[in-house]
Image 1 (cartoon, rainbow, N blue to C red):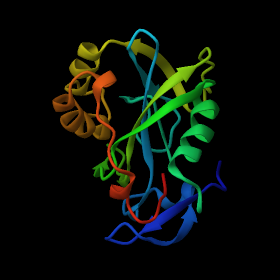
Image 2 (image 1 turned 180 degrees about the vertical axis):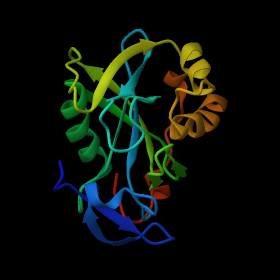
Image 3 (image 1 turned 90 degrees about the vertical axis):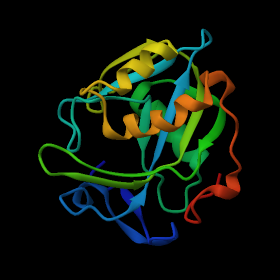
Length: 190
């Protein structure tokens, strides 16, 4: 994973180069492309995860199901289908683009900053969870009310809190409307 490249972005969301992921997350992290995925099960619950305690940025926080960085030239759906099995051991289907223009900046207690244009997607899980311990410390299926309650808790990631501010008004996750892929930043395709 140390050799993973991230896509750097200009202010308009256009690709402006690449950089190694591990060396790019620091106190002055450049704007780059990422994604957040909310995975549902057949009962309509959302998978909430706790980031591994050894993660370089925001260790141990509780957050959405899976986050990641699309590789240069990789589409958003491809990136999610690559990253979710690597972290959680499940496949995903029924991907729905929900918040194509989500962007946030947040600084962790140790000074590491996240600075991401981070489209948000809902997907359905296929299979049983097999957590990668270097990525995920714990995972729990929670109903929507429990997810909403977590978003206000100090143990939640800042991006989860910000995303939930936009997702709660959309209602039940099963009813989140699909957003147009034309709203994605120019650096990524659906």
